[in-house]
Amino acid sequence: MYDIISIGDTTTDVFLEIDQATVNCTIKKEICQFCVDYANKIPVNKMFRLYGVGNAANSAVGSARMGLKTAIYTIIGKDMPGTEAKKNFQREKVSCKFLKFDKEKETNHSTVLNFDGERTILVYHEPRKYSLPRLGKTKWVYFTSLADGHEVLHKQLTNYIKKSGAKLAFNPGTYQIKEGLKILKPILAVTEVLSVNRYEAETLLKNDGNIADLLKEFYNLGVKKVVITDGPKGSYTYDGEEMYKLGIFDTPVVERTGAGDAYTTAFVGALVLGHNIKTAMCWGSFNSSSVVQHVGAQSGLLNLEDIEKMCSEYSSFKPKKYKG
Image (cartoon, rainbow, N blue to C red; front, side):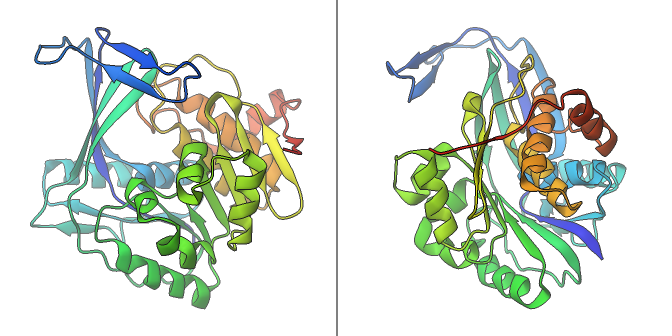
């Protein structure tokens, strides 16, 4: 039996570090725009290329580093980036039993523009023919970002969760958020952990109210544990009994790609290992704080020993009850 199986797309990330750009924000900084000179050549200071990344891949690698027996269902191109992605999974001890090669399409690609510690990502997803494989037994499933055409998985995965008794962690990607709440309701009804950022929560619920309202609304849709991250303000959770808030664990930031994946991966990992929701929040924050100190989403992912050591060293870093 697996501890967790990640389901989602895999991509190649190309990081471009630039310093000739500006950021224009509204007065309250609710909306910011990344600006470069139009029709001009923009110098790039550094370039990095990482294979076998993306939400599902990052979660699978992070789970494996925590000692969980992990597999991934993903579709990659029969090309060099796809081959390198598979090597990355094997190196990280992620089972490739459910990995599929697409002989007709290339591996997905993202270009990450890194400026002043923040990232703007240009994402390209190849259309895929998704179909849930026979997963067998697993304690948890981690369901995340996919391209257009993934809708068939919703019914398949919902049926699998109901029949198998596995717990579902859902961290929706861009295309899933765009589908809207009506399409996602059936899968939310069988979700153990939903993890979204505040913007995603407001978009799905069409509600720009306070965090407490957002948490309760998702819970009322059937989600058992709701997690909403809110950038520098930290994270919030609700399990139907108590709401908690935890600020960020402040560390120097090199690049923020994968911070959300790292948080949710460690949060779910803590639950898989039998910890409570407050401990899970700490694990998520520690893992996220480590990832942002590195370029890319996987270099800073912590192993179980590292996380437990941080919990011991920073025992005063704990969630507090949140009243909204």
